[in-house]
Length: 123
Image 1 (cartoon, rainbow, N blue to C red):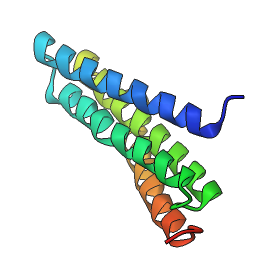
Image 2 (cartoon, helix red, strand yellow; image 1 turned 90 degrees about the vertical axis):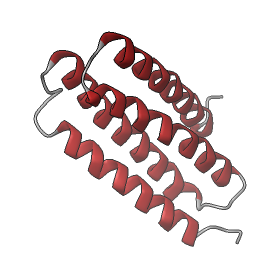
Image 3 (cartoon, rainbow, N blue to C red; image 1 turned 135 degrees about the vertical axis):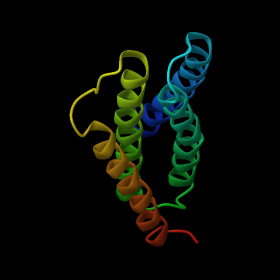
Image 4 (spheres, rainbow, N blue to C red; image 1 turned 180 degrees about the vertical axis):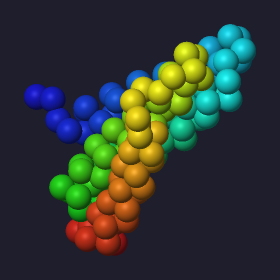
């Protein structure tokens, strides 16, 4: 059975892979700083997602708020990073408002993790 934890962890590891790939591609292609920032955002958030998954499984985060927050964090990072990468390589936007929408999703994900921590079963 595929669980939310397995899906989140798999995506986090793909985020790490993508982050390293974008950093390397940005360095070797001479693309704009946006590519580097996209790679960094992916790399910064991949371990955060892994840690949040572990904390949720250890009941240090309330279950459903944590699942929602982790998903929102993943979606936000993906949208934000994709927009920056497209801008960096092609000089165009993914779509109008993609980066700000992704940024707000990331903020929502982090706020959701705060709420999940406050309502956890364990201290």
